Image 1 (tube, rainbow, N blue to C red):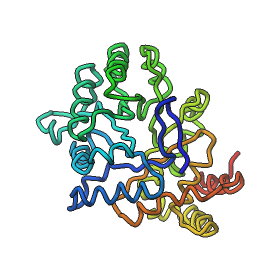
Image 2: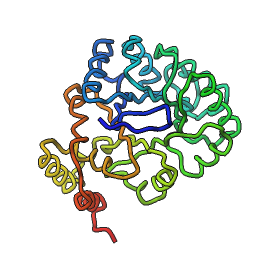
Image 3: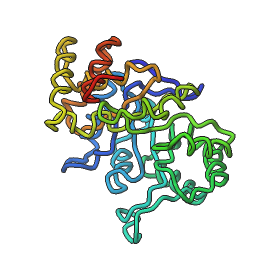
Image 4: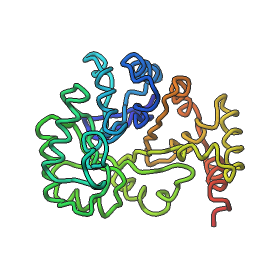
Length: 296
């Protein structure tokens, strides 16, 4: 499995296992979670994507319960903060909101460390742009958690270029990634400047929902695209899921897709995407199906 350097000291596996569904279903046992992590490690997938809000603020603890110290040294943990929703430990809150204050960022980091039973977070992301963000205060807080050793690198999620430059302007630490929605169905970042902004700065983007939340495979409006994906997958001895992820991997921006599933068989096949070397014509063929028309 290829690896991508976000900083000189922090590298992630090219494919990332997303843990937003870790709290789904009935079996959250350490043994079940460990089996999922082991299935990832068997393919060279070492990076686990978390957020404090996942699983109603429970997914980090579920991971921590399955994370002996020897396993922690084999993985990288990405987690996020700033969303406060009326659930879990915030059940009494009246409304969902964002909090990028210093107090909240520092408390969130400490809480995540306790829940995941670890001394450090590899990458901390601000989960959503905060309309009330004081960029000087937030930037200083992110610098602080890095300087403390609690966090190795910091980035953002769902930020637009202007959100990025505002926050970065108040920081000593370089932001290392922006996790945004990118897929064949959410392809606007390729043309609206989101990816170009990062690519110009040699910042690898992370892609959440790289399979379009599953609608890529179940929505009849995408039947032609699905047929084309199946053909590409079959030509490489794999399936349409791998082909859809390979489409992202083929882009020179060094996109890191974040794939979330609780099915062990599907987890075991995540790495198939790395076996597809997609040429330019095939890339544009899939893109054309996604657009519903040929490119201009």
